[in-house]
Image (cartoon, rainbow, N blue to C red; front, side, top):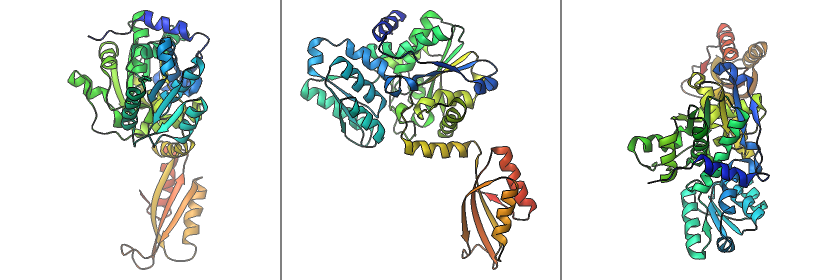
Amino acid sequence: MVRLTSGDDVAAAAALLEGVARRTPLEHSRALAEQVGGPVHLKCENLQHTGSFKFRGAYVRLSRLTAEERARGVVAASAGNHAQGVALAARMLGVRATVFMPETAPLPKVAATRSYGADARLHGADLTAALEAAVAHAEETGAVFIHPFEHPDVIAGQGTVGLEVLDQCPDVATVVVCTGGGGLVSGVAAAVKERKPGVRVVAVQAAAAAAFPGSLAAGRPVALSGMATMADGIAVGSPGETTFAHVRDLVDEVRTVSEEDLSRALLFCLERAKLVVEPAGVAAVAAVLADPAAFPPPVVAVVSGGNIDPVLLLKVVQHGMAAAGRYLRLTLRVPDRPGSLAAVLSVLAGVGANVLEVEHERTATRLDLGQVEVFVVLETRGPDHAGAVVTALEQAGFAPTED
């Protein structure tokens, strides 16, 4: 039978982290509060050392190794955040660290891991392959394998986020937590439920990588057959036995969010909260934005990490703008004569739409003689403005269709 982490376990971890981990700020979000109908705060673990909560659990785990274990070194597998947490904790404690990362790991995360002094090795196409390589390395060398979530010390360390939430927002009613393997939500739930059992704890997974709903329905950890999400930090194929038990017994609800929800939330954090957040780190905010009425206030949403590849950031911002109705893709058929395109652009300028792309098509068989098909990508101020743009084009006789 799995022993659940206790409030005392989390308190002991907090003592170890005193003066080591940052006590991250709790920021009120007026924009979210207006939607929820009460106070909403963001727990900014994206401002933690290494850019995510993972440092907490890694440091607690490594600090409790024996002298003999430290001498053997440690090994981990991670897509990025756990790698950086282990690397920094190892450097602070004087332990040699090797980290296996998928070949697809974002280059900034690989570079950061190496900058903390770890031997970062790229292996395999996904985290599963990197994990297998890390376990094999541990068996071959005797290095201690540091699991990203399936260990009581890691769970207790992550649970210190929950203790800080209770101190910073004593009247909290709902805590919303991004969830992959479940280490963070397990620790937060253990800390919160012991001190305030009435507080609702909600785990949030990416719908395209949600292992907990099926596992809870089956009554045991069940591996996903595949995953496809931009939120690589919570793309975990199966919960562990320990985290499964914590979520089953302590977490009130598991919700999922779509890729569009994640994109919209990331854009929201950039524009309204002035926070740089990675897709995995914004899952809790995405859940609140997607269904504000489901979260009794005061609400604390844990923003779990901010290590985003700038290339991905650009793509996600564009995706988020599209999901928020701020990109409009239209096809129009206009007469093939001088001035037709200028007339279209004049209408768009008149309603304040920003033209990002324009394409002509004259030779398609679907077109009548004397017709030109014009494809435009526009930036708008939102759904209402997009509707006004379409109306203006219709009134001008261009009969636009949305792509």
